[in-house]
Every structure is written in structure tokens, then in C-alpha cells.
Amino acid sequence: MTRNHSVGSKPMTSAGISSALGESAAATKDPRAFLTEAVRLLERERAHFNWVGIYLLEGDTLVLGPFVGKPTDHVRIPLGRGICGAAASAGKTVIVDDVNADPRYLACSLETRAEIVVPIIRDGKVLGEIDIDSDTPAAFTDDDRLLLEGVAEILAAKL
Image (cartoon, rainbow, N blue to C red; front, side):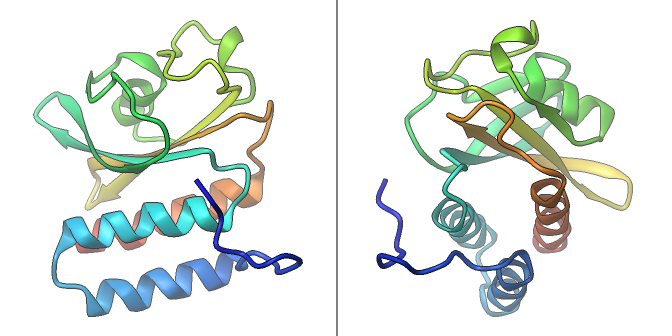
């Protein structure tokens, strides 16, 4: 996917992303449209976010919602299965620096090297999660985690 930055332009700051999503959440009535906008914004503004998706919890299964990136076979993931299922079951962010070294990883793309999964939680209940893959090993920083945990709070309020 082509990034919307002109040559030499800088991506939005984390605060800018959070602010833009907060404004969009207030203005958008359709939660699915808002989720779609969120994944597009995250993928566009972070060059190392190669696949960005949101899974929503339906019973004991994570169901793929809006995403940006290559198609995946993993459209339904039982709780406890894979990195996504582990993060949702624990209700905690999971960062994997090398997916090939983690036996929980459900392979989606041969290019993927790292993954971060951030639960979307409201009132102590997991509603879903943000799942991001990177083609760069050890791609995700503490700043990425903080950004995505903030985005998850914004998403939770809209769901």
C-alpha cells in the first residue's frame, strides 16, 4: 500500500494520531466506519506497521474486522490460540520481536517478522484487539505500545 506522505514529509506524532482519532470518534456515528478509519490511519502514519487489523470478540472467538494489508486466512481465532488469542485471553499487550521464534505465532505472511497485539478493553471486559505485523524484526517500541494502548482506549469508547 502506498503511504500518503509526500517526499520528505514526516508522519504524525503519536499525540497527533490520538487527537485525530478522538475527533473522528466524536464525529463518526458508525463504529465500523470508525474502525476502518483507525486502521488506515495507523498503517499510513507508521512505516513499520505493514499489516494493521482489528479483531472483535464474539463469544470465545476473535473475528477479523477492518484491516489494511495482505489478506489473511486467520479471520476467526479462538481465544487462547496464537498471539492474538493469548493477548485477548490475558487482557494484556503482547509484543513479539521475532515471530519465527514464538510457537504461538499463526503465520499470515512469510515477510512478517514482528507482531504487537493490544487488547481493546472497556469496563474490564475485552471487546477485541488491535493486531499489527511488521516486516522488520523487533520493530515495536515502547512508544508504539503506548500509542496503541491509547488508541485502544479510544476504540473501546466507540464500541
